[in-house]
Amino acid sequence: MIAVGTSDAGAAGGDGCGQCMEGSLARMRYVVGPDDAGAWQVWQINSADKALGSYTTRAEAVRAAVDTAHAAGESNPDGAQVLVQSRIGQFRIEWTYGDAYPPRA
Image 1 (cartoon, rainbow, N blue to C red):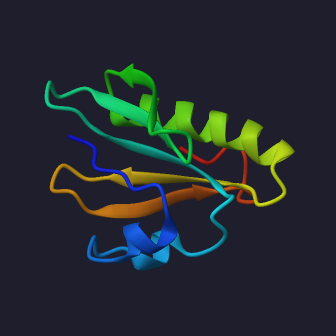
Image 2 (tube, rainbow, N blue to C red; image 1 turned 180 degrees about the vertical axis):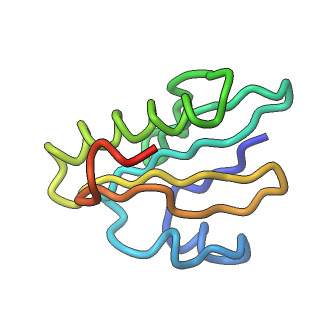
């Protein structure tokens, strides 16, 4: 199950990835993580934790999240970021607006 927070302060407190959440609260964040059925979900945080889609593979979910974050970053002065949550709940930064787009496979 994806566990996401809506603020930098809350997310940095105890999930082991404070650096993942550094920066402006206005930055759009998209989280890719496994659901209980084994599929990969993409969630938008900062927007009532809205689910954006379900994908068969992690790679498909990451690509969809990066495409969505890239489009959001174009119109958001604070940019956008994609985080990936592992099956054991750890987060890592996968892509940040300003990185190479599309990312290398």
